Length: 169
Image (cartoon, rainbow, N blue to C red; front, side, top):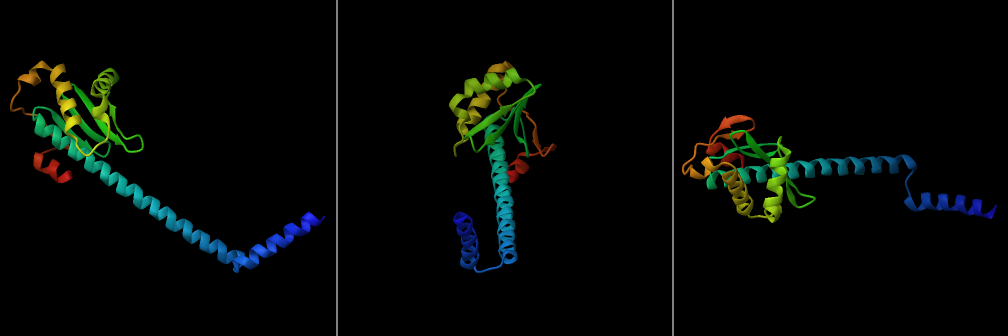
């Protein structure tokens, strides 16, 4: 019975220490929770913005190295392709790598194995862009012969120009 009394005393002491009634504490906690949720939304938006910047930077780097490749950017990633094949690359910040996707899973898996360390996130996207250019050039011999190139630039699913791509970046 003395343990019950100690628990009751502890409850009253906690309320006395906190100094506010339960409704005030609940309101304060609710306000703190709303502020934390807004902070989370803000951080997610900032992260999404940075990811889009990375998509644009990769597309711009690939385009500069090999104008004959088709490049596109949208919220899902940077799409690099030629003829019927494409790779969609998106940074996975938590894992520290670029994720590679394609309708042709085998095509994407072979690239991922060949690219290896080039898929690690870094400030310099040239290594990854060179791996992409090399992979497509190996796969399409005619792309290796194309010096000037006539690839397409797509920004947010609309035909675009290199200037728009640079602005998106």
